[in-house]
Image (tube, rainbow, N blue to C red; front, side, top):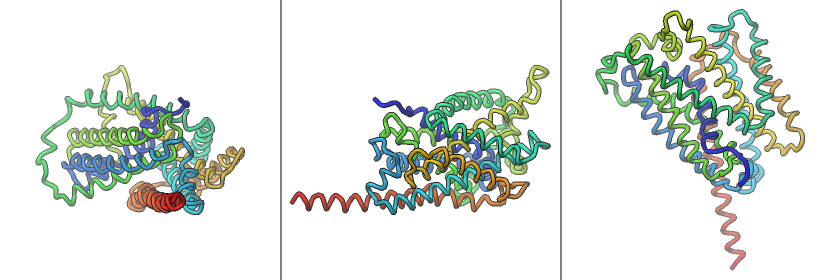
Length: 370
């Protein structure tokens, strides 16, 4: 048996590429539409996201020999399709890494390091992410697995510690919002769950690539349950009318927890933990961009050059292409559309192309036998 990622490690990578920024954005986005029925929207989003994940995992699992995704696709759809798909995916991972980096830096500037120059924060984060990518996806995924275990423990602890402060009456009346509002609330979580498309690149690194469907489905389902618990906690603690006006309701939940004089500002400990998860997300996105370019141009022995080039471009893009005070809400719709296009539509076209090409190849093989 060849060494590679386990199902649990692959599942952890899926969780870490979705959860960190979704943790900030999803509660407010869902509550704006569905109010006290926001938890129903997250359940609906989890069901839809699970279906998308099942299809993506099945597509990735077809590459059961462990060949890199773009090389495997090239053998079935032709070099031109694989080349175009590789460039599109590389652009997506790069641009998404830039957005995640700016969201991360903006949060740090407001809540943690207000006087530190943006250039310093960006440069340090990119250099650390480049180092992580240089160690390989297996190392990144194993760190993700450790963070996943800690994340589950923290979520469980917050439920226990906040339970006495929750008001179940804030969830009533159940079902008051229309199906349209509930569906609109589910849209943003589904968009973020579509980031599970990275399974196409990660699956070949698994010890058993055909187990990709199980890893990605469980990863998305676990993320969905986490989102639902965050939304429920925010609703039952603050109420639907108050929580909509909180910039980061997820972190407001933690600030409520008190340990008397034993621990002060426990929310800062949680923020430091969250910072690690965002760093892992940026590292996974940077890996995706570098890996796609490496496979698209069939670079041999020059991976470090691509890594340094992409790292420099990411630093420059994050420094000059985005406004200094980055507002996540301003381009929320454009970001969601981008996620749908590159995580669902592009893989769908590649899947369809692989089937059509494979079908013609099978017919030619049968004609040759006759």
